[in-house]
Amino acid sequence: MAEPVSEPLLTVAVIGAGSAGRSFALRAAQAGFRVILEDVMPAKLRDAAAEFLQLGTAVELALTVEDAVQNADIAVDFVPDELESKLEIFSLLDRMAPPRTILLTPSEVLSVTDLASCTYRADRCVMVRGLVAASDTVRLLHPRKAAAHTVDLASELLVRIGRKVAVELDPDLPMLMKNMGYAVGDAELE
Image 1: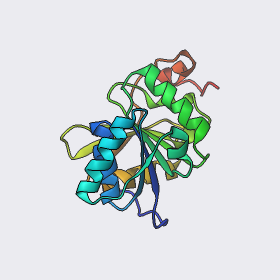
Image 2 (image 1 turned 90 degrees about the vertical axis):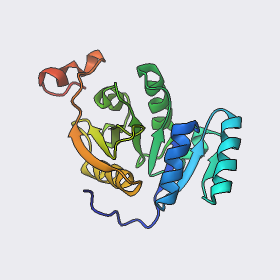
Image 3 (image 1 turned 30 degrees about the vertical axis):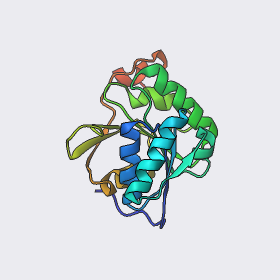
């Protein structure tokens, strides 16, 4: 289990206010994180605002990704679980979030090594499997370059929202040609 982080209140940006994003934002807010929720569809933000108000939970809303991540310690995306969508959001988050921001993405099929290699923060990218499933345990996957602080902070977030965390090196074969060296154990390709 991760050691407690010394910061009193961490900011979590949640990108995507569909049912999975709203549920995650709610659990993070209830766990004591400052949460900022963003979605490209204003109607989803209005629905989320009404839901959180009814539950008495404080979640801030942002109209743009840039506004959502400008002070984020962790940014979690809930875009479709396909390579093109994930690469697009990782590129956007990488450009707009402060350098310290950790990128955490739920995915059941992609390689975090591939996604991280397309950012300037490969050491601050992690992936979670099993987040939207009914299981209490999730798998936190990280690329070889992941910093220990990244894994610890992401683990703490997941533990505080009520999940048991199994931390693993990314077991998936990369799909991007530039990462094929990882699959055969060669030296890192830059």
